[in-house]
Amino acid sequence: MAIPSSPHARRILDVLEQDRARAVLHGRDNGRDNTVAAGELADSILGTTALLHAHGIGHSDTVGVLTGPNHPLMLSARYAVHLLGATSVYVRSMNPRTDTETFSVATQTGLLRDTGALLLLVDEESAERGRWLAHRMPGLTVLPIPWERPPETALPVRFPPLRPDDLAVVDFTSGSTGRPRMVEQRYGTREELVRRLANGLDPRGPATLLSVTPISHTTAPMADAVLSTGGVVVMHDGFDAGEVLRAFAERRVTDVYLAVPHLYRLMEHPDAAGTDLGSLRRITYSGTPAAPARVARAVELFGDVLIQVYGTTEAGGISSLNPLDHREPELLGSVGRPFPWVSVDIRVPGSGTAAERGQSGEIWVTSPTITAGYLDDEKLTGTVLRDGWLRTGDLGHWDAYGYLRLDGRIGQVIKHGGLKLDPADIEAALLRHPQVRQAVVYGVHDRDLVEQVHAAVELSGGATRTSCDLKGFVRDVLTPEHVPACISYWPQIPLTASGKPDRTYLRALTTPTEDSPGSQARPGPRHAVA
Image (cartoon, rainbow, N blue to C red; front, side, top):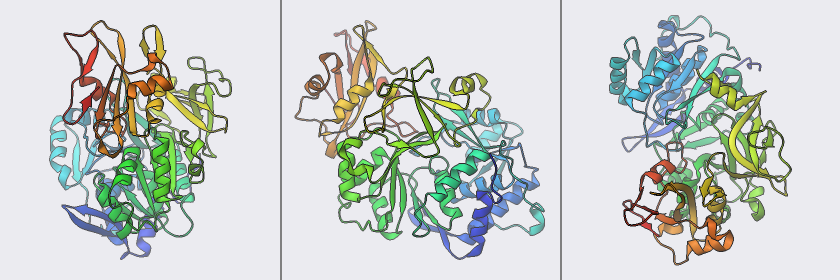
């Protein structure tokens, strides 16, 4: 895969230098607005580049980055690393749709060792953590990310050409053992991803992107595309529905990425109906299945700006439900059609042979944006990548309209009473109830080691109970065997750092009782159990 003559980091630098007084980043610092001008960001990028160059960083070198989740200096660090053709590794957290979780010092030390990073760039708030890491990892150089522009003599005579197969980014996603998997993204793949995102921006003018999730991961290439085309990025440290609505009106936001729970909370905010949404061009949402009734309500509120994306860290975007699709109620339970550059196969799990049309099977994808594999894990790479195809581990099928529908994950089947029950089927049944906003189904072994069906639900409007018998509802929609043994009610379903329902945490709240062979959920601080 060829690298463009002007890679995105260089394009961003060129655009910044064209109008140094233009505001390009907006954030919040200790409750105050913090605006960064184009010239300030350009100076920081060049200052960081000079610092790395002075320490001999170039091709095949790996640089760790540790900053706040949406700090401008994170962008300075990443662009400087990429100007030199090196590898950037953001070690604060996994590929998150939240910013509430941070890797432990032990995990960060292991990741820096495993990726071969001998230099760590930090912002002011991460400096102390950097010192701890240097203490645990002798030989690690920790440097503050500068804001100052260096003398020209401190910069390389010319930026080195990028090589398509060189490693650009090591990203992290959750693994079955609890240790993050290290996902490789080559320069050829990264440039292809940013190029496609830039080409897909609305042609009416430069975009203003709001990032409410850490800009180091999911929204990273989105920010790269926006800044390289003369746009502006607004960064919030975490999601607050009221702050997001104010940003829509005051910052004239055109594009925003939200996890599904964020979309729900935004819709329910009392100021949503009265907020000026006229600047919005695109609300992209993903992460977990969305209730069709809730999505239909979002269309009524926001209009034809919604785009649902299905993808993975390893694959990038796979398919999407575009704004026109959102006007068709029968399509709202799907994840749309594949992007034009993505090919999708549905294959019989365990065999790799094509499934019959309409039959559920494992989703395999191939595209210019899929990962090169997992760093230092040839066995896992060989399992997931086959002849240029990526096995997602997701189950799905094509519906009558040719749209992709998800059917759960391989290995999540609950075995109860000799039956194999798919949690996705039970979740879909619960989501059909008008009062259910989100549902998570998982298996729990009782004291007799019999796997029982448990469900956690989030109700509309923050209710803690429903007048409807949800167990009876599931029985009527599916079968008596699908009825959960226990349903817990949550004002907000707990999420993992990747923005997905935290099944491990939910199971941890569930313990067998002495007086019953079944399991009961131990009530958390704000939920009821049925």
